[in-house]
Image 1 (cartoon, helix red, strand yellow):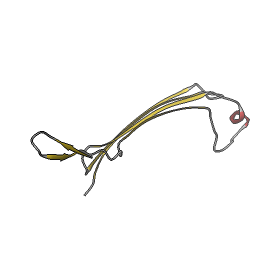
Image 2 (tube, one colour):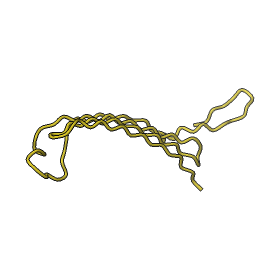
Image 3 (cartoon, rainbow, N blue to C red):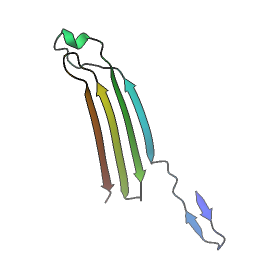
Image 4 (cartoon, rainbow, N blue to C red):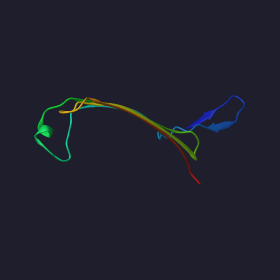
Length: 92
């Protein structure tokens, strides 16, 4: 996409669609391994997750992620977990 200014110069505007923002919500519980009959009990769990990726320049990529999760357990108190991560990628 080209954008022309009144001075007659032409500048290139980047609109490549590579940046990303998203959110997910999930409900339910799945077990990878059943250890006892307590693992077969229907328990509530909720997860809310967000992610943002932005190409700052052709060489720099910024990534931010955050999540909150709540999980009931059969024989123990409910677990509340918060996670945050970020990163900056430099391409050579």
